[in-house]
Length: 208
Length: 220
Image (tube, rainbow over all chains, first blue to last red; front, top):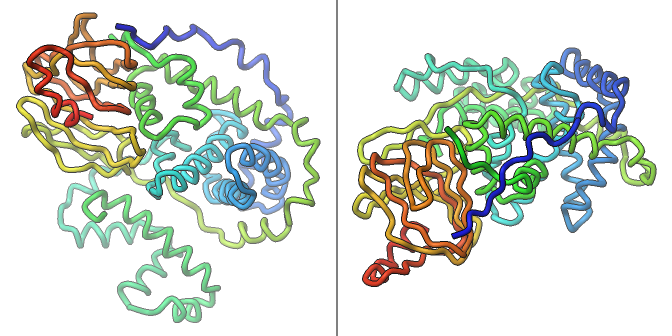
């Protein structure tokens, strides 16, 4: 019988002292990411995009066979950076490490979608991009589904609540909502999609 | 105490995102119980990220050829919506009337119905990875698997309880990767719950136990 494992090396070397990216650069990247999180700063995001996108493109090209998929990986990663920047915590690591995690997760889910034809997006459960500090167990002790659902809707950001309530409770069409709220149809759709994925997570497997 | 850990090569592939979901989840489950490996993963991720985003690597890329920066950026930033952290959910899974907390890494994996044979229960995790099959395997006290071998690999991550084979005792958190060249006969005196990944059916090797080869398929 052969056990196929070796003991872990005690340390993988002086990771900190051999940084490829110098400290000033890391500070700058951290600052931009924080500016995106705190003030939705498009200039800071443009800096991040110009720094990361070409590198992500190069990495994605080595993982995907066609250019369109590599391109999708870049767009999806940068779009996640924009939407999830508030989950970045500079005390827990550098912006490069965080963006790497976001990118690796996007690529992992895209590859899995191609190979296994599953859209289960498991990556964020395997490599969380934020330490989960939110624990709202108490809320979910109520087993009345409707109450749970309404509660879930109430806990969505205001902009998503409007769309969910309009669409499901007032039964307006997406087009009507777009006109009513004076927003592009695409925004309505993306808010609805985001809201539903959140509700689905909150309600757990019963609603799969 | 945890005695069995993933190899450095496995941890490296894990950090690179190159392992199938089944093995990635196996390493994540172990790391949640093993601070040593967790630290190792964090350090390696930092290193790999630095390498990936090293500045001088961008020299060959003529940005404007690939990207219409302006329009992609304005598409992305058009909406100010943010993605919240999903509210933490705590699921459980039942085996023989005992509820076990489901590890968070499995929150979005669909779990098949539980099947039982004697003291063994199996719930298939539907990851759809062709010949790689992933299960939660539960041993009732005194449960065991007759001596068997594998043609492929077999990973076991012990989530709860303990079991023994002729090499010794395995406890909660152990990450046990075996290849096709061994035979063993695990028995769990007090019962246990394992996360298992195998890429081929078990094959029973001992006399009358050969009649049990259907169990090999059951566990795989």
